[in-house]
Length: 95
Image 1 (cartoon, rainbow, N blue to C red):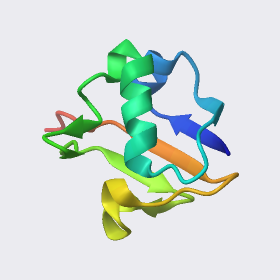
Image 2 (cartoon, one colour):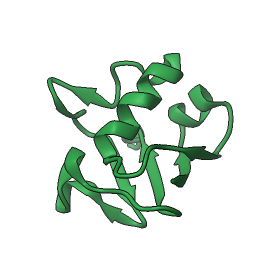
Image 3 (spheres, one colour):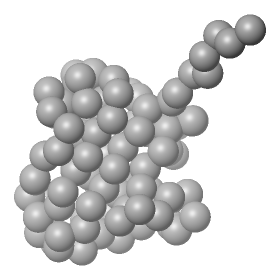
Image 4 (spheres, rainbow, N blue to C red):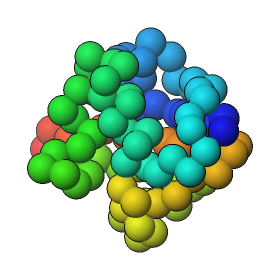
C-alpha cells in the first residue's frame, strides 16, 4: 500500500523533505511505519517510539486524527492514508 508521509520541523530536516510517498506492506500499522522511519532516517532513530510506545510529546496524525485517540501504535493503515509526524515543540521565550 502507498502512504503519504508528512514531516514537520526537525523531522522534515531528517527526511530531507516535507512529503514522502512510500510503499508499505498491506496491513501495516502506525507502529510498523514509525519503526521503518526510525531505521531509515538517522535523525528519527529513537525519537518516534520509546519504551514500546509513542514517544512523549510527539504528535502523529492519521488523516488529520491524532493516533493517541485511535489505537495508538496499533492503528491500522490503508492505501492512500496520510500520516503526519510532528516533533515536540517548545514554547517561545516571550516576556
